[in-house]
Image 1 (cartoon, rainbow, N blue to C red):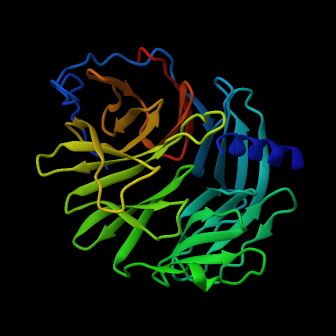
Image 2: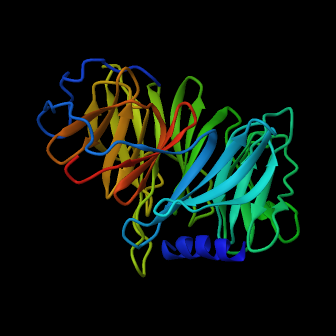
Length: 360
């Protein structure tokens, strides 16, 4: 267990819906002049990695084509959840922890000292989070009826989480087990957190705010609460994950990405860097416009790969000149990048590995 955790920590430190046209030939708007790309399939088919996955995170190391994914997997026979990690190159899998299935959203947070994982509660039952580090796995003493969303762990062994019950970002001192009121930050009780995507430097929150939606950013280098990045009555999809390879000696700039469906029925893909960002509403830079609903996506080498779910599902890649489209036989729910491959969580909770090349 110590060797496993040391490997995971080494990797961390190194770096420290629905609806689409079924006509694949339909023109797609992109940067510059709208173009039409041939619906050619990817050169290499995807490979199944794992089934019954509730949540996953991908971690890229600085070695070429190397990395791991960590996943929460449901065991339907014994009605419990397993925390596993697997090397995507040699397929070595290790079970890190196990607990009964909890209520609420399954969550993962790769912290400074290990992994926080569990379930965020649903109001009827409290949250159930555990911590896996160098020693034995331990319960995280959050006395919250939830729902709660994990945000970050700092260098002083404090765990930050957003509590819907308290309408605030609460900070748990992991040493004492007590809340630290000095860092509490209130937010609107009318904001419902629908999903949180973790990057190395920020947590992106997709929230519903009557009558519309918003994308909130929580920058892990500051203690300043949520910062509004984009807000509208339009439908938002995302935020999408952003996994990038580390740069030796410095933390890389990461990009949070999401899609906003406007009144024209088209999805506008937006990005903003996470270090630093403005404190004012900032929809960021428009990467492209897709004539369909974008259901999942991620950044790969600072380029965007996304998916529109339909029959067939279209996996697309925004390049500097056009948008390349590939019909695939799976429906992505979440996507993560590991060098020259995509790690894809599908709508039926299957984890896939999809190799990609610069020519795709």
